[in-house]
Length: 110
Image (cartoon, rainbow, N blue to C red; front, side, top):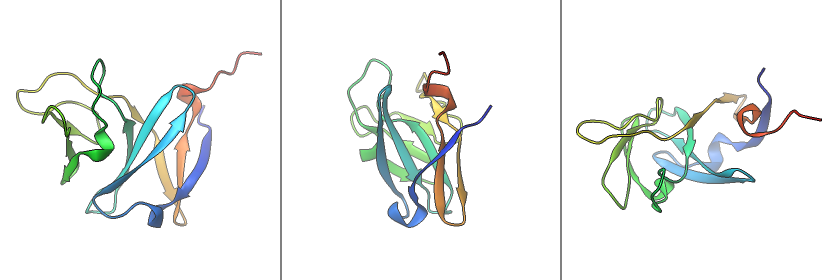
């Protein structure tokens, strides 16, 4: 089940830029590509300290600013010789509003 929450507008994120959403389970980087697509991935690489939101976007990819690893924004998978992945989150844009699916990081237990 999806549980989308508005986190801002698409205009809040510059083209080829990123913003960070802070959650109790960690930070999420929200990217807007040159093609105007919006993606959500974990801000930090597993076991590393580099913030992906400070990385350089090229196409639908981002290069980590500390380790130069390249990640696909849609899948979270490392590209080329790089290994690993960052978690991705469901996100959508409706009437200019950016909606993040928080189902994967909120507890539904009573």
